[in-house]
Length: 188
Length: 100
Image (cartoon, rainbow over the protein chains, first blue to last red):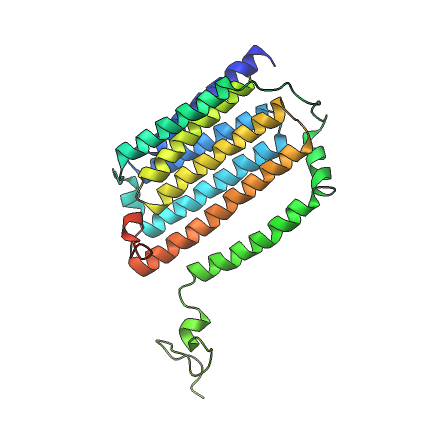
């Protein structure tokens, strides 16, 4: 790895940490969202530096989309003007700061004190192809387990977010006339 | 670019995310903290893959982590919507039904 790549990797790392910290320092939710997007893109680029092309691109694309969804939520819950206005909504700030610093120190001590082994094997010439072959081959069980979990998440998300379901209209036994605020149909 | 450098950066991002997840009151901001923590796990996993064992298993594990992040995001937004609809709030301190 060249010196330029080393420097770029460190710059992206520092940018990711600072942008992540800015999420909880800046005085509006809109700026926090942008800062988080910058942090995620920096980490995605770092993953690209580590030769994981597919994972890096997925992280970047997913996070950009997620920030767009968060912008929609800002409009839904806070309105655009409050989202752009200064705010500070925190609790247990000292406890949180102590927990974060303590966690970093423990993790950093582990990183620096552990005698990491040498690399076992060599990376495949095309990591994306190797990942695809693994997912379609001997690692297919992973994706077949994730799939129903994702379907369950979709169902649970819709149930939680629905304003009025058939149980609200017809009751728990789903019988009887619907309890609608405005009767529908054509009056027959 | 070393494994230690990668893991130190990941540890710093994880700690920042932990601070946000504990300290923030707005549900969406708590989710941002959680996502920073998962993002740190992704970076650490990518570092382990490249520097220790670059075989497809590590990449599959990262795909699993990304899927977990997606599920967290989807359920978090659904819960935030429900909370806002029921309690007209997006603050964690106002959601005390389970505590009561």
